[in-house]
Length: 203
Image 1 (spheres, rainbow, N blue to C red):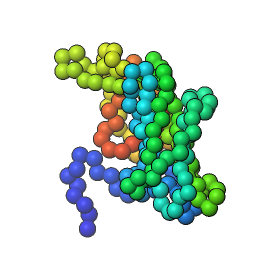
Image 2: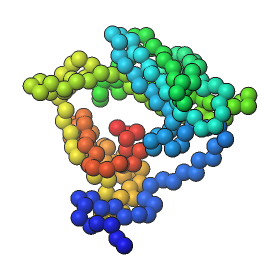
Image 3: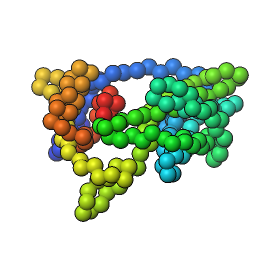
């Protein structure tokens, strides 16, 4: 009647994070898409430019899906209408002279907002932030970010505290991040389960 107790980290049930009720129109982004929003942006660097691969997964009958790409300041760079292929909507867009996400030195993020239209009106919208960067590992020289050596110094972090267990508040999440940054870390291992999305956003 009780699942095995031999696990390294055994979590029981209960609500220990924010809970949201999502109310959507009949045509909406797929809420069952691999735990995500139903909208993916994959940037691939091509010289100074960033080629964006855009994918949207929709439930219901859509008339069109339009993605708006903006810079960090909110200035619109382009609006791209996606084409339906193999049960999903796809498209591409190239950011010319893309500003690269460069770790703590310059953590620059673009934004893409996807809107689905049905019955002549917008029926749902989701957005994601993304960085344009490339990275590689060398067994002798270590980690490289955007072609430059980027030594990784970091910590392993668990999402618990005395007296509250896993039910950390946003203030506690922010305090953890401040402590991690104060020791000069530029990488984190989130051990070893899915942490609160708010902490990923802080990262």
